[in-house]
Image 1 (cartoon, helix red, strand yellow):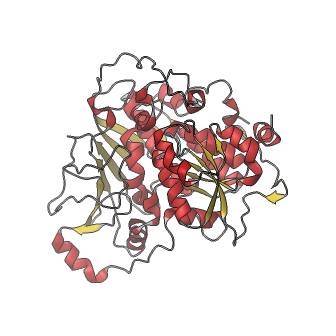
Image 2: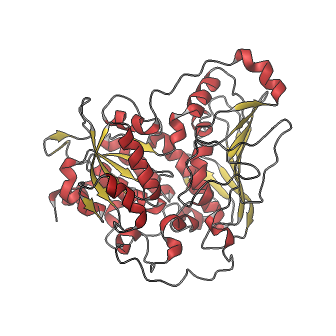
Image 3: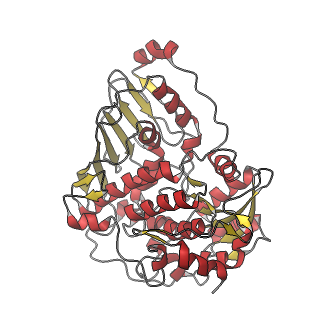
Length: 470
């Protein structure tokens, strides 16, 4: 076993008992150090679909050198574009082997893999002193997110979750309007994503996971599974289909919630909810997400702000009511299309409605800015609105500049972690079809012992335990 990997297993794994730091120097270079004049040496885990989009966006900043590519299936059609873009860059199918062989040449890592595999790659990278860009949501279980937040703090690396709206117009507008008192006394917010999802045509009476199929000959399926219990390969676990299953993904909530709730969660200082109530779960079953979901997330009074309830709606026909004067629901042209093709407009496109004491706001997803409704109220407020600053860098440049010590990540694990844990609690309520009563201080579910145990999740597969313990 290589020295880098031995060092991680011995001193880098995290657990509830605490964190051990690796030495402050690795191969003579301070942890996390990138000279301001240098480009960041970037290793990329997951190079197809969204992972490939992340790589191309980071490369387009001119601030990164792509030095390693890692994907469990380097022969898949969806990995070809990135391979062709970087034909001379070393390739790996297992991130552990990549770190063994190239750890001293890597300064930062992208994680554009399925939700359930974000955690081990990120923990390994941080324990070796590597900065990490992780696609949203951060991880699949509450405890995994907790450990990732602890790791980022202890290893003092730059971390960024990939909800790119945090570097676009909505971020700076929400911040400016909150600071100017335009957005105030918010007591309720509706968040909605009613587009068709992959599982909407499936049989909700499914009695077991589907039987195995022949896997692609070029694929390392065992590494794809990472810490999850063994399943034989099936096409409905692969590529974007993993998002359908509780065991692999976070459903519509984890996928879109990070683009819709993010700025409200940060600037209203919501933190963790004290209750999550599944108001509606159509087609509930133990394996994959419901056909339609309505969840109430209840947050207490905090820092002089009133208690607030966020109500989440997903499902093609589960359309929330909108206030008078709402107007047209527009589809933001800046939202990246899914890997399956074009984003299809819905009757109510992804977005939010924010209810304050005096004003109501309509917003979209990602970087879409807010508007005041109805139109008459917007006209009355026009002269009182503060100037909104331009973003100094997009989300990808922000991360790379943070690696170089020039900026701070806008969606660091410290900020994105509690948001991701909100989704973990929501998915837990979906999966168990029960109300979750949560103690924000102890971070425990207090009304259901099984739900409390599921904050940690099932034990990892043999050979992956080191990521979950000291």
